[in-house]
Structure formats: structure tokens, C-alpha cells
Amino acid sequence: MLNVNISDFMVELKDGSIKNVGAPTKSAEAKLFDPDDVEIREFGDSQVKVVATDASGNEVQIAMLADQFEDVLADANALREESRVFE
Image (cartoon, rainbow, N blue to C red):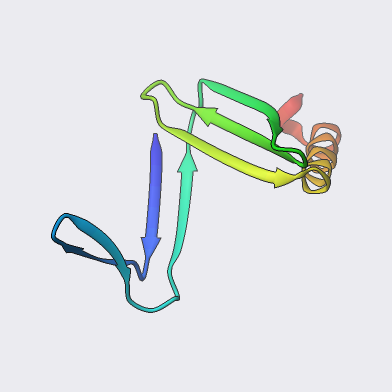
């Protein structure tokens, strides 16, 4: 299931074109629950990409710098050691 929450977002449709309008205070949040596949791969020369896809074909991609990925990896390893989830 893909859940997308967009705040303060406004577009203008005119002559078949979409134009971003409104204040620059826009924000968005996307959540993908119960992914069937999660892949980690290189992205460009200095980034790592995490791609998660569910059975309905919904997909969320996260691209980050390698040092950011190292922080995520360290957090995941700490969670594995400390959390009851992995018991």
C-alpha cells in the first residue's frame, strides 16, 4: 500500500500544461507498506539508491550519498543488535 500526503500544494492546469503555483512551503511524505522487493544499488558516482516495490507496482526510491548510507547501515546494525524485532 502506498500512502502519499502532500501539504500546501497547488498546480495550475492551462492549455494542457501543469504549472507549479502557490507558496514555497510545500511538503510531501510517502510511505510504502509491506514491500515485496527491496533493492540497494549504486546510483551515479557517489550515491546509493534504495528501491522498494510492492505487489501493486507502487515504488519508492531513496537516493543518498555514500556517507549517509553508512549512517543508515550503522543504525540498522544497531537495531538488529538491540531490538526484540529480530528475536
